[in-house]
Length: 321
Ligand code: ASP
Image 1 (cartoon, rainbow, N blue to C red):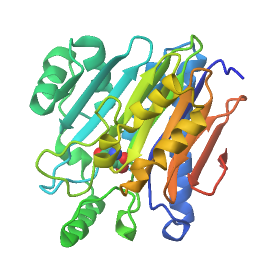
Image 2: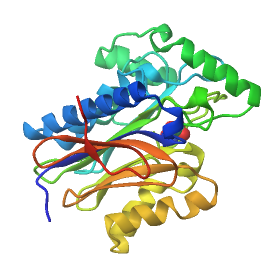
Image 3: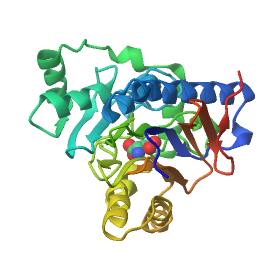
């Protein structure tokens, strides 16, 4: 069946278990996910481009403290915030990515501007910010905007273990946040994907994850698929997860379900990777796949209602008021 347009989003994956979630927090997540997916859906209803729908949906999650992106980004070892984002337009395989961003409120919008207003596909760190301020008129956002006590607590806990962690880990203090992403098909059949993250808690040395890597955590190609991934970035990158899903569908004629399942439960899982993907195929069919306890996720049904799920064993459902 061909759906004229559709959208799906995720807000991160990992050890999201019922026992670590209060009813209030769970409801906050469900409402934030619904708000995000409906923002993207509104762009599609108005006849907008798939790229703009994904950027609109991701922007809502970047502005929420609940997710590990923009406002809710986790802290690095040096107690700073360093964010990565990527946008890909399946219509012409155009892509824009930014990495190690510290002073931009919505890195996904900057990634989109890199795609549309620069001749490059990826800009990093101070250079990316110079492009933002000087060429695109972005406002400088102080690091303070991104900080909360909760993040310091998480970082202190993680420093004690000496590790780095997904925002969704098995430690109660670490359970609350996730990288965000969106995939969409517009009514003209264009596919797009956008992903944004604060990365891993306690990351250092200019660590960059899969999110800004085209074909790693984000990919879109018209007639094929749009994919956004979340999970351990080192492994998502090493397994070129988004590109592998696209390749299986393009060259191996795999269905969207088969391609996502084989990739998320294949090398990525065998190597110890925890995470998931959202995807939309050329007909607008939406698919979610994860290999862990939960992934914040949502789509919109044919009547325009948001359908949301969090835990792995849960079906998508309407959000109660
Ligand atoms: N993939 C992200 C990264 O490694 C983290 C996440 O998805 O939560 O930077």
